[in-house]
Length: 243
Image (tube, rainbow, N blue to C red; front, side, top):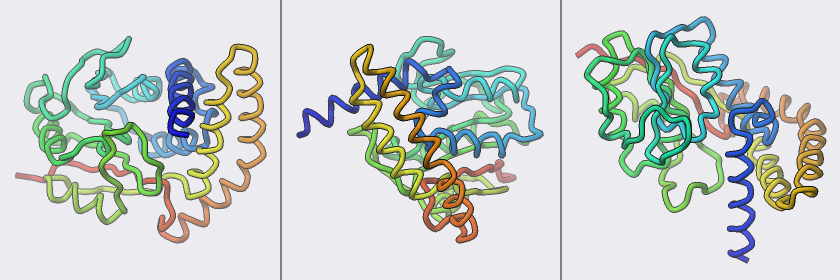
């Protein structure tokens, strides 16, 4: 059983990497759609000089982050094609007060001591610098064995406040239905590993996405009315506190 699950995960991750910088990526799973929507909303009317994508992974958000920055810098601990920097977020290879915005989206759950990352983020941000951070609440175990945390909106606010940030705004991302449909999408795509079957799997997944999407919009609206009690995760915009 574990062998089968690991096989599905492996094939699903291969699909993510293959499609990560294409528009199709955001329709592989409803969780990606709602994550992108949340990022677009928080970046609205913002433009930064130097923006650091911390934990950039496969550069999935690079296209939208470039639209809101003059200089986009990507960093991840795992070497990937296209990364500007490879390094540990707890030891950023950047000067003090050299970055105007740090984007750290669904990364902190993979760090045993997230405060080490946040203190380093605070160091590299300018006095007026901002942090955009996303974290999971209801989400399946992923990135094993480096999956340590889940946060409520209150837990995220406490973490940021403790490490020298003032939360400007915080919003829910997706709902429990988003999580459930994302698991189904992962199974469909993960099982569709052979060349011909793969495209059939993509089509089935897209049809599934279209069918459930109206219900997801409804659940998302209800969840927001309930102050995000059943959120897949949260996104926050924060700034450095005055020393």
